Image 1 (tube, rainbow over the protein chains, first blue to last red):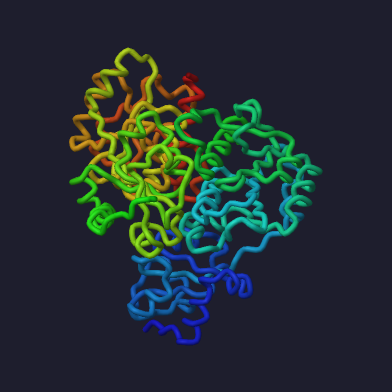
Image 2: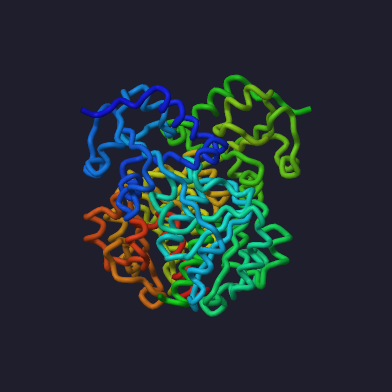
Length: 263
Length: 263
C-alpha cells in the first residue's frame, strides 16, 4: 500500500513553483521519469530526496529504494503539482545542493586544469539548465550565477538540466565581482564571451578558465567585462544572424576547452 | 494613418498557429521586434513579407519601408494573434521559403567544402530553431528535416531561430533516406551523432559533411544510422549526465567543422 500525500504536504510542495518558497525551504521539484531516475542514481540520493510523488500509485524501478518517502496522488492533484502541460508520472521533491565557493576552490586548489563557468544575467531558465547539463558533460568544476541570472531550480531549468543539477557544484553568487576577483587570485584567467572579442581557438583557452556567459540580449555586463582578462568570440557569419544562442555558445567554448586540455 | 487589420485577415492570420494552415497557405508568423527586424533586413524582404501587424499603431524604423503592408490592431486583438504570453509590438506574416534539394545541390556542386545538416526526428521546436540559428552562424549550406521533425515554422522554432530562417536553405524532406543517398552521391560523407560513436575531433570531420542529428531521446533512427558512413560522439562524462542537449551537440559539431575547414 502506497501512502496518499496529505493535503498539507501537497500545498507545501505546490508552493515550490515560486522561487521565494524554494529558497525559504531549500527544496525544489524535479519532474519526469528520466530526470528523476538520473537524480536518484546519484550516490547521495537518500540525502537529496525529500519525497517522491507518483501519479495514481504507479511504481518505478528506482522508487523501490525509497519506499518510505514515496507518496501517491490521484490524477487531478498530481497534475496540479506538476509544472508541465503534459506531465509524466513522477515528481521528486529534492533538497537544493548547497556549495560554498571557498570550499569548492579549496578542494580544487591543487588542480592545474580547471573550468569554472560564470553566468552573468542569463534570463532564460532553459538556457541555464542546458548550460548545467553541458558543464556536467564536460566535467566543469563549478558554475557561479550572479543575482540576476535565472534560478538553477526554476522548473524549466530543472527540466533542461536533464537530471544533472547534482553533478556540478552550483553557486549562487551574491557578490559576483568579488567572487570573480577571488577566482583570479586562485589562478583562473577570466574570459568573457563577447561578440567583439578575439576569435577563440583551442590555443587561446587557458588551463584554468573562468568562462563568462552573459545575458541573451545585452551580453556580459560592462563591470564584468572590465574585470575580465580577455574577451573571446566564436567566429561566424554575423550577416546571417546576430549571434549564437547563449547555451550553444557556452557549449562550444566548453568543448574547445576540453579539446585544448583533454583530461 | 495606419490601416486597421480586417477581421477576416485577423482570422486568417490567427489560423497560422496550426501547421496545417501554415502549409496550406505557405505562410507563417514571426514575432518580436528583433526577429522581425532581422527578417526585414534581408535583401528579398519585400518578397518575404505578406503583412506587418503592429500593436496599437506603433511605428518602427523598418516598417517605413513597408507602409502598404502595415496594419494595426488594438491591444486585445493583437494579443490574440500573438503566440507568446508577453508579446512584443510587431508580428510579421511571412512567406515560407521554398527550396528544392536538387537546386541547392546543383548550386553548390563545385564546392569542395560544404556542410549539410540533417534533422532526424527532432521533437522540440526550440531545438530546431536553435539549430537553424547555429547553422546560419556557421554558414551551413542547407538543413534537411525528415517528416517527423518539428516544423521549421512552428512559433517556438521561429522564435529560437532569431530571424535566421531565410539565411539557410531549409528543406522538408518527404523521402529522407533517398535524399541522404542523393547527398552521398554528390560526395557528402554522412556522419551521424551517436553516443556510441567514435570520438569526434577536427580531423574526423570530412570537408563535405552531412551531419545527422537525431531525436532528443532515441537518437538517430536505425535506418538512418545504417545509411550513414560514420557514427561520431562528443566525448564527455556520461556518469554525470546521459547526453548533451541536441542543439548544443549540433552546435559543437558545426563549430568543429568550421575549425577543421575554416572558410
